[in-house]
Image (cartoon, rainbow, N blue to C red; front, side, top):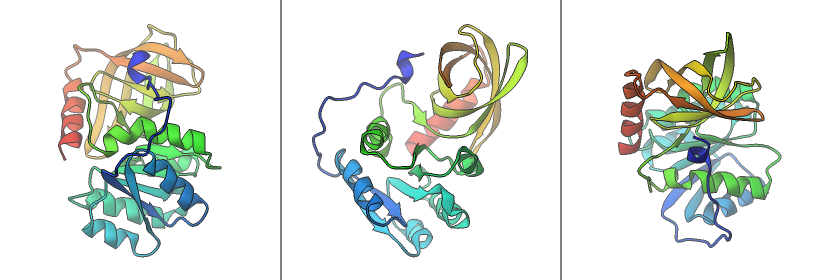
Length: 236
């Protein structure tokens, strides 16, 4: 499981021909330039939008959307437009800044990943590199979906709250301040956009400072709900 959530990074960054577009909502210099440059390194064209972003996202197709999470109702209106659009419903949403509470506030919209402020180029490149396959629709056989949502974990006689990082039909990685022993049996519960809350049995496969991996029980038939959701997510 540890290996399943490890990304191998290429040693060099060679700009590629643009094959997808990311809309940058409401950013000004120097953030806009920095974001554009990071996406361009991976063949993703950036389009800056400063006004009527929600209306544009209802009419025009983009493969990714980047917006500030601290903008409250404005950010929520944009995300609602993205998920409500037939062409953009599976658009990869990147949040910028904001707190963990902000990310949880918008969890129903399926925020996929976050750029933390202050923006730093190395960390930004690492994040785009890790998520670009989802943006450009180059899926591997065992795809992992980056998505941020609140996860409840019950195990070792206690209940804990964590935040998802990536998930597949076979398991998930999470951020958590609580420590669970590798091999511990756990029950996890979470919801994802169009997927109602699901409860799954699993085993903690690895544990690192403030993060852990859970491998789902292959005999838990409830896992099929997650597999169906992932298949649908990728087909749209």
